[in-house]
Amino acid sequence: MEAPDMDNDAHGDSRQVAMVGCDDAQGRAWGQKLRLMGCTPVPFDSSADFLRAATRGHHFDLLLVVLKDEGAWPVLTAMCKALRLPIFLVANAMQRDLLAEVLSTTDPESRGAGIDFAVLPVDDFEVGLRVREALRRNEAVLNTQAVSAMFGDYRFIGSRKVVARKGEEVRLKPREFELALLLFRNADRLLEREWLLGSLWTDSRIERKSRVLDCCVANVRRKLSLHKGNEFVLHSVYGRGYELRHVTAAALAGPVDDSGFPDTSNEPLWLGEAARA
Image (cartoon, rainbow, N blue to C red; front, top):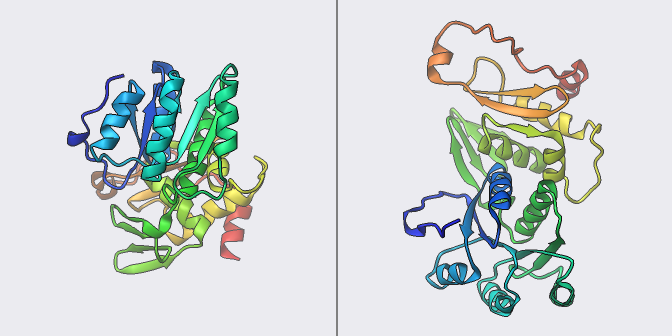
C-alpha cells in the first residue's frame, strides 16, 4: 500500500482513520469495515509515512496501527497525545512488554488520547466495534451533535436530532437518529443485524433475536416515510439485516415496478402495530 496523496483527497465530513502497518488482506477487509461505518481509511506503509503526514498538518480522527517496529511506538504515542488522537493498537502475543506498557498507560477517561488494543488474530467484526468505540469516546463517528449532512431531500441536523425534508422537520430519538444516519451513509448496502446491534448498542448486550433493532427500524421507516414511492426505501432482508435503497428519479417517474419488493418491507405484522402504538 502506498501513502495516499492527501492534498488531492476530498472526504467531506467523513472521519479519517490512519492505518499503519496493515498487510494487503487487513487493508482490504478493515478498510471495507471502516467505509461501512462512514469512515475514510487512509493507509500508510510505515510509521514514518504517517508521522510525516501528521507533522504536515493532515487531520486524522484515529490511528489504527499493526505495530511491527516497536522502536517507533514512543514517537507515535507522543505525537498522538499532542494531537489528542486516539490509538487502536493491534499486536501479537509475543509483544508482551509492549502490551504491558499499553495497559499501564491506558486511561479510560482520557479525551482524545486514549489507547485500546487487540491481540492477533482479530476478526473484522471486533475491529469494527473497537474502532467505533474509540471514535465514540473521541466524539467522532457518532458525535451526532456536529452532524449536518444532506442525502437527497433529507437533511440531518445532529444538534437537534432532526431530519428536515421538503420544509418539514422530523424529530428522532437519539438511537433512531444514529440508525438513520448509518443507513443513509450506506445507501444501497446491506447492513447485517449483528453489525447494527454491535454498532448502536455498544454499552449493552443485545441478543440477535431481540426486537429492539426491528422496533427502531420500524420507527425510522415510518417517521421518515422510507417506503415505496419515495426517493429512499428501507427494505428488510429476512434473516440478514436492512438495506436502504436509493430510487432514481427516472424510476420514480416511470411505471410501478414489479420487482417483488413490498411497499414497506417483509417485516412481521407486529412491527407495524408497534410503530402505530
